[in-house]
Length: 236
Figure (cartoon, rainbow, N blue to C red):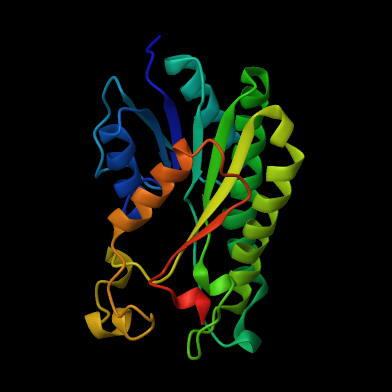
């Protein structure tokens, strides 16, 4: 077994997820990278294990945790990055939208976090960082994401609750709440749309999110924190 720390990263196939995988590898971690689609952008190696599957299914979570334990024998960090995002007027959200959002964003969080924590409780150490959204705290006129934000706001609340519930067990829970990030998801959006929605009028890059997650992964005295990385948009 390696003496390197071990991180599980979900939603690892592109955008923020691929950036997280690269960032954790560069920081000296071994990584288990999970995604719904085939990880074509990633190449498996001794320090990088790839797992495919729908994060909203319990068997995918089991497969991910089994891979981590089989290859590395421990889990130090879980990054809950997998998530989907839908925007439309509130009255147009359907049951299918609701179920898709809740399956990926909430059941996906529940299953993998529960299984990972069982190992962390044995270790009496570990930490969980969840990617949420600045929109959950500060809605923006014209971005109609109400039902999506039920899930992201719920994750912020769960993060704070779990931080208190497991503080004495040595397990930390934090969240990173990005604003709009310059990823392939927004490749067709004009650059001006990123800058006009935040007070600093700058563009949030994937690296900014990765830096925040890596900070929380190593910040031994920080738990229950929702760290906004959004150029100040959440402040008003």
